[in-house]
Image 1: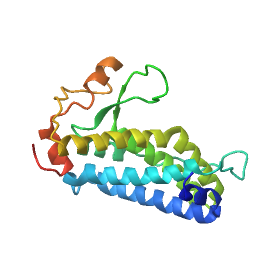
Image 2: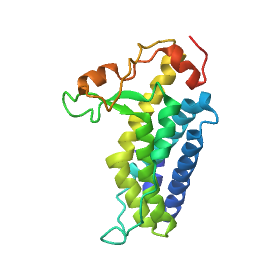
Image 3: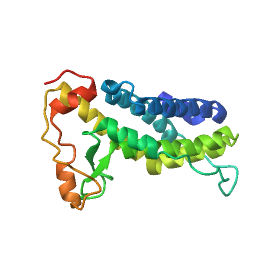
Image 4: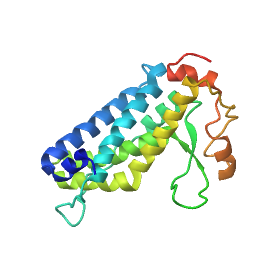
Length: 218
């Protein structure tokens, strides 16, 4: 175990919570800013950086001993903020590279890849993080840490990891001059089978994605 992991596991929970909350708040603000589309050519590189940094925060949560909430039942934080607008903005901003192929659990034998969307991933991650932030802002620090840790292991961690692989792959394909085939209208809501979706997911010509990536054309 690294010194950093040992330090995280033993440090004062309040100090740890401040660092985790600051990182999560930074991610929420940064992703909302990117979704506005003011700098579309830099969207994917910015998202690659932000998701990478968030996963470092998630790793610290995952390496820490289990957090336990003060109350047996989770206090009500009110209605969840709507993320549909953010989801839709990213779907437009990332077209035609929004859809990619992912295997949910690499340790399940013969797991079939499924088609996912980066825009859906980001919206789901934000929803989980905001839920914990609501507890944190109401002074329920242990509840916030428990929620962020639990949802990192069960939902937003795997989701962010999948999105990061897709974002890194986009950058790599362009930087390494490895063009992909055309998408041909892949849609996760279509009637196609999972196998068909998985086969076509992520197939985009590098000439089409170089612009959104803010990189040179091939």
